[in-house]
Image 1: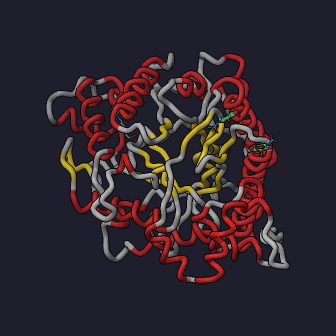
Image 2: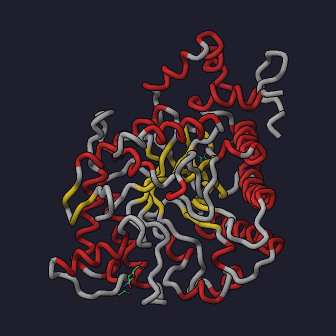
Length: 436
Ligand SMILES: *[C@@H]1O[C@H](CO)[C@@H](O)[C@H](O)[C@H]1NC(C)=O
Ligand SMILES: *[C@@H]1O[C@H](CO)[C@@H](O)[C@H](O)[C@H]1NC(C)=O
Ligand SMILES: *[C@@H]1O[C@H](CO)[C@@H](O)[C@H](O)[C@H]1NC(C)=O
């Protein structure tokens, strides 16, 4: 429920807000002016201490979302307003983290037109996304390439190498092992990380609005089931990122499947095939230049069992297993960077989706209560009205359904009650968590 009182009904602040009370006081004195003060808001880098993220010296557990489309929309003046709409609405829900694409390779409105050639207009659009996020106190997980074909991905890189006559193979997986393609990708990474934002004047690598870099969305390398090819690529690319940017945390972007090096964990996989896609959650995430692990949750796409209750059980087992890995094996935080229930299920109802979301949010809440490695979750995916062509079978317009809206806002309030609110969250949470 959103009904619980975070700030006390009689004007007495709960102790959890501690240092933040003075911020609240300023808010009370200046009212909506606060929203403008935000423009120059000081954010600090997200850090890590063992299994926990740390912000301003305190553990940080979060509630957030995915809006992959922001850069591509910001290019176009007629659609640019949607960036502010979604960020503002996320902030109003008390959310603090958004994951989005910092790539568009050779597609419509491409950032990278061809290897090493960038479109300045699209870069300015990404500048805008980052500057706006800062304004609303939202930190970004920026993903650097797609394993899938949308917005270019591996396939585009392989095509480029082929066209330039340097490609070793037409296999999409040559993205991982072809030296020319590795060079293309490193050049891309370097250009993005050292980009100077035309709005804030900050190089991306120096901007604390960026929570972390994600190497690649949902990597799979099915042509090498041993996992060695992908392991090698992650080692090389994560080391490369760290050589340019020592400020930001880094994750891989894995779905979370256990591989052949983790035989005891194989029964947790959704089905047998999951061990054979060239990834290995523990082995990959153990690499020292990887700061935290990422996991997705898609029982609809991963299992043949259509039973909803079975899916909920899978979700719990899947999450708890990975959180245990974080605490015992990896000693790193675990971030559930995508989750969703498909609207294409025969028995789909929005109520079921709310139940599905709640299982996930509750596990994160319990992890936060106990200082465990389950650090936060990012729902896939939020859109604003009129974006049907950008939807898949998981998208929601968060303010369209009040029970879903409440579920997410309640999670923000619950997390804030444990750990305190971030200064950037204060004005929003105040409204949100005190509503009767
Ligand atoms: C890091 O975590 C350890 C163990 O929980 C704790 O003792 C230590 O004070 C923490 N360090 C910082 C800088 O927060
Ligand atoms: C590479 O991936 C694309 C998109 O999934 C697919 O259409 C194409 O056939 C793949 N190429 C090869 C050689 O497998
Ligand atoms: C979790 O960590 C916080 C701050 O680091 C501490 O105050 C709290 O007692 C810890 N809770 C548990 C259950 O260990």
